[in-house]
Length: 456
Image (cartoon, rainbow, N blue to C red; front, side):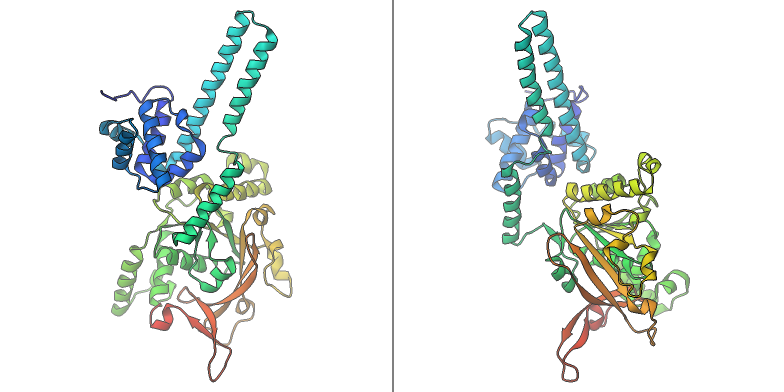
């Protein structure tokens, strides 16, 4: 029997898009499962495909169009291959599944409210007892209210199911609950890395090395997983120059503004080829809102980290802008936290500090130095400060690596503390530091990283 269906029917396209998103990318299934039940799909083929996906997910089996159709047939609810292909063709992208879910939920609530209104009308016209009509209507309204809260309310079982899923992932060695920065000392302070769903601030005064450290972290994560680097201060060529400088040791200003020697061209070509193979994506638009960042993030399959450089350049909504700077920075802070939770990814946001820090004798940053709004400190899961003493007291050898103090001033899920890194500003390279015992100096600091192996 043919399963050709007019997907332009009112409301059906939203439902088809949810199933199409699952067919395109099974990674969106947990988000759908949290918000929709099979009963929310009005067409039997859609319910059959959704129930098949849930059955495969419970057994840990691979989910793709072939396995979904096979599982639906095993459940006695066969769906044609042509219908599945039709859904995939009509779904623009799985990245917008959250919006499709919202539209389906609104459609189901509207259906329920219409049925409620028709039930009240029918009772009144039949001259039923008004008390009985109101009681029945109240029961239906309570049910609709509960349905409207579904997906926003976690039951006790939901809470601990999520925890044990995380534990299972950790025990299996496939934990996706955090992202390592690949700086051992910093990861140790963080308890392993940047927590998925966490909002982290990397804050310092201008020139301390925020962008350089963020780029170093992004490239390290991109060795294994995709990263989105939203740069609102530098264009693509400037970002590329800083990354190539780290790999080659050629100063950024030479890469951008001066002629290079033949051997330098060769080194640049090799570095560019290596870096181009990493899945680190950047924005093209010079201005973005938090919603724009979400759209970009959802378009990258397997994304593991979002970096935003920097907070003060994120565009507010027109309504928030009219309310004033404090209000719109508070709104942006909350929206970034919501983005992290919705995407189940760590979001690392670079921030500037107030000028008041310059007036203190000890210029090391404090949480009160965060600019514009107290919401930043409140919303953040972690706040990382950078400080270089040579910024204020220049060292005798300008070519020597600068000592970068990295301080974890807030850590919602663990301890706070500090570590040190070596910052080669000329080459945009930041290396971790550890202590090693030597015959000459048992407490000698040892810089470790690519440069010790003759590479930058």
